[in-house]
Image (tube, rainbow, N blue to C red; front, top):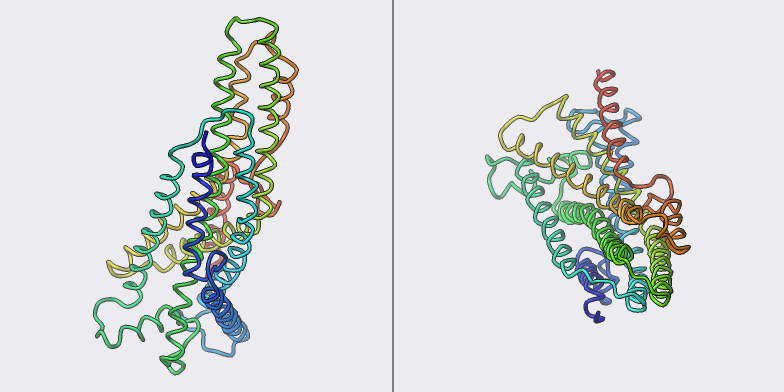
Length: 391
């Protein structure tokens, strides 16, 4: 297997991370992109402080809490920009660590003593998922802009209408000036991109880890099929035992790779899941209680909620696949008769059975498929409680 085949995923993901320099993550950029990142970070801090201040004065009763500028709207705005700020910091940290993580990953691939098949489709899958997320995010956001303004507005008034409608939690009619509106517009787009990008990072890294587990599991399957054939010269038995030992060591290295990635990805995983959970609950609650008037508003609501649900489920399922594939080889090992079990096969079975490998949210929770059902149940319970006690 050539080095080029080995690092298809790593080079493709590095290219995706290079694109991130245009929206505030300058790891693979130059001094100009670094300056833009610092400016964006400072602006996000400023707008987050302003949003929190609006929440405080709203809770203190110092403003008239109209529907469009109530506590819920102000709190949602503060959480949205808090997510943008934390997403920028954590994504920047993760992509900076990717430089040394990718080298260790590549070294593990190239120094393998086993002839493990490469995954020729991984690059296409990464490009497809990246383009899909980008396209759907653009469509959803354009609909949000149309929903905020409608179509019955003069072109010269569009920008002001959009800013006051989408940022009513932050700006009043009297607060509006073009010098404030332009930075707010830029920040809203940047925060939206970062929100989608943090989920994309988790999905792509999970795909890479799952792909390597899949290739290891296929190797186990083929080796089991060869082991079940009636050989059996002593030299061939000894050779197979050495092969099983090397394969077990590959699984040890793969588990170490998952834990290395999890250590760097954990904070972003926690942020993504908490943020998606909050906004799914909020969207459902507002949709049930208030509903949406007008075709464009109803279309945007259902498409926005659908996209948020799809993205949140994709994050959980992609990360859960790592745990699922970490134990998948056991089904092939169980096909071997007990008489065909060498000490190395028994060690491998014991290792795969008892070594829990999964991506986590900073160790607070692990991502498996059962977690998706638990989150769904919690969302339903949360909505029922809100509906019951809402006045």
